[in-house]
Length: 320
Image 1 (cartoon, one colour):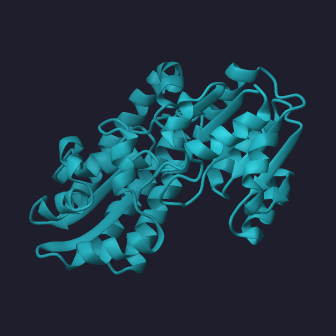
Image 2: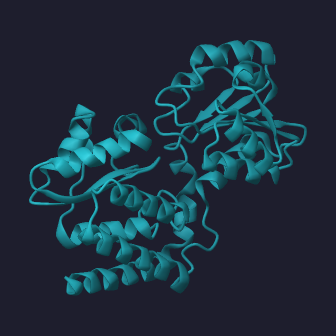
């Protein structure tokens, strides 16, 4: 997770779509594995298995990235149950109290169930995790004033530019986090929102959603010249914005600052872009530096939430 591994390790083991489905089938077929599901987000990749030992879960990581070995953590039995409940309740999130993680865990379980990797045990486990998360959300104020990842992106932009009057935002990709960020940046007075995506249909739909204008993917370099803030969130497994591409765009920008916010894992922006003059580049790990004060403000609510988690862990153990 973001607590144990840098993004250059996490992106090597992150999976989505068909690749994740194949990995679930592979996990389930391993000797000693009864059931399994995988939570893969921009901040964590976690494998939950009902198995005789940790070997299959460990193999999931090491077979994809040898260096992952140095960054793994293992939790067993009640400790693993507690961890899942804390994750679903956003207590282990980079932004404590954020709401997206519960939907991501639900999606992970649904995918595992559809792939026949998760059965009766994982069903009970995950449903109890969802109940726990709902209790935390309704019985505490953990989410009050919580800063989502998209809002963190807005805070970064505000520190660089102040307001965004007469400035343009570019969304590269049709990711949900990018859409949320664009809506929040509108509050800073952005003059225009531009959207580009490899799929014109999805790109146009996102442009309609955020009150923006869609532009074809082939115009990406020209769009980088026009925009002041670029939010990148695609499903591409490699860099979409390369150092050379940004270097060319900066020559045409004539000393105007450019802010690149990469919300994707694997990363879509070459880290080398941050070394270019007048380019401010951030990835999801950089967001960590912005949210520490926000965590402090909700510490009391987190204590109450932890008590709810503990009660639900005990209840789950008694169910068995």
